[in-house]
Image (cartoon, rainbow, N blue to C red; front, top):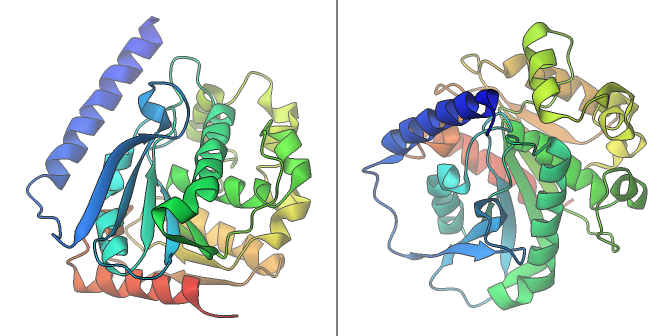
Length: 294
């Protein structure tokens, strides 16, 4: 391990400890069943595991939510979204909460995109075993996870983009809705911090690559085919400008969308505190928007 990787990993371990403290001591609903650390790829990597949450009492196929955690591409883990997963399961969803490899020690965002695609393919192929409704599959991403969610929504319905990103999936799948919480969607903006981040999470010479060109959403032909999209941010969210910029692109491309800007808990507040009356309102509006019959 190089010196840079050592200090990055030390910093990320500190963040994980802080997140665990923030999530500790919160009770989980007894009526929800949780299945932990299910491998979606045939290896032992932590980054290739997922958790499943669902109601213990279910008689019919449930709508499905695939949830992707945040963390600036370089940190985070599925347990960060555990409370959110439980809440969504309590509302009647079959929830898949994903890990993916973090962008340290040579892993890049292109690897994460392929991880998410592999997880989604595993889920699509096994939905009936878990009691999921194939006609009602939704995708949710938080912060950096929102970027990965957008890309998955695009490539799952586009053979061209699967070739661009090196994804092996052969059949198209269509998500019925997309939820993006405090997303880092326009991380391609020109600023010193984001140039530095891109140099860490993208391959050398990324600016000329087809992958990067297709992450500049205004230039991606398939962008207008995104499913109906719900955006969450608030005035305390340090990435709020990215959400507002992304909404403008959605509007310009005539993608059906809605923005909730009413939160009070800052960045990704809805994953930490579902007991807040305001956060409950936001999540319930998110559910109503995603599942609304066209």
